Image (cartoon, rainbow, N blue to C red; front, side, top):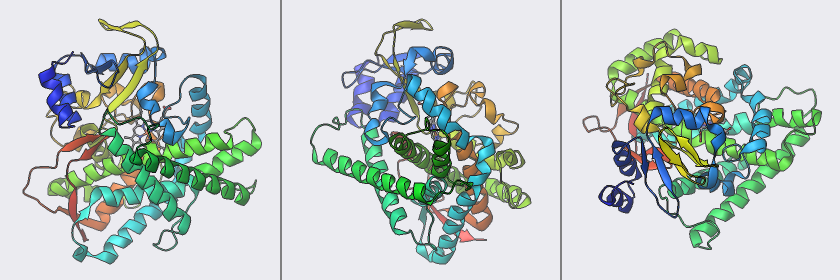
Length: 446
Ligand code: HEM
């Protein structure tokens, strides 16, 4: 058990990152019990590998993850067992490497719109907050590639604006809840909980309308470039595919799982690029030479530095930094006795900043990923997309879009930090590893 003088001060200050750092210094497995749960922080890589891969049958996502069910229903992020297997099998074909090129036009439209807006507003608009900006870019891209909802000119059309408003508000709420292990259960009738539930109901109603409209639009001969269109066509051919309600849960899951994670990772990546002119120049040469790339996942091999920037951002700022599992049976893990019901917190920053695997672990050094095998990340000590059967289903999508965003923005703008001489902004735990202060940069057109 972590001694009280090391656990209480960070808990009182709501500094969960400090709490996990103290836990990491205390041993491979450390108890941090809180909020009525037996919580075990896991810090050693072999144990993480056991949990995610070799002994994955001893675990499920569990009670802490199920708090998300209020938003995602029984979607992939939180479900388990046979239901999870079926959902993963049905969702997967639309997210394989071979399916990705169909989403690239949507990704490009979203990035082009960001570039146009930044150019139009000019440098007079002052420094840009990277998290806000990239949240908008990645949400517009996801709504286009998931639902086929497009921007009209550079304006959000009515439905897009409503979905985007509700999703942003929901994510803000989730981040606030994620900052505290002690958030009151959603069933309690607090004003914040009532507001949260109203937003979920509104988001679900909008998603139902979008699904119904897309179903009406879709012809059997279409080759849809959106995830929803593909799922709906598959359902016409095979009635055992996702039901309307399952589809809604999975669409919400994709939005919640795919939006913030990518936006925040990209914000950290571009923030570091802005702070390092030498890196930025090298990145610009690489992306100029590869001008229009990437179109497909294989093209990332031709942009190794750009890909390295994204992987390095995910190493230093893994999203989410803690993976949660619940033990479903008593068993031994390494030399530790795990009891049924234990909640395990896999501390990814501990692994990602371990000097044994990552020389100079605190430095932002994308070239360390030269020759890296992105298909075997867990073997290379990188758990940025998790590992084992429950690893991220959207990881190829995220890598392709992430590299595309960095490549296109660096070709269009020279980034400069708004406060060049200060120490880098530190991360803060809020479910995700968000910046403790806004990541502000100036973007000068090239
Ligand atoms: C940089 C961006 C992303 C990061 C860092 C990321 C990270 C992760 C991680 C670490 C997991 C494993 C969670 C666990 O083991 O508990 C995960 C799962 C998942 N991710 Fe991602 N993700 C990203 C983008 C996306 C995108 C774009 C989508 C969808 C289009 C997506 C959908 C999912 C889903 C559905 C799961 C649950 C998979 C399952 O349990 O079968 N993610 N993600």
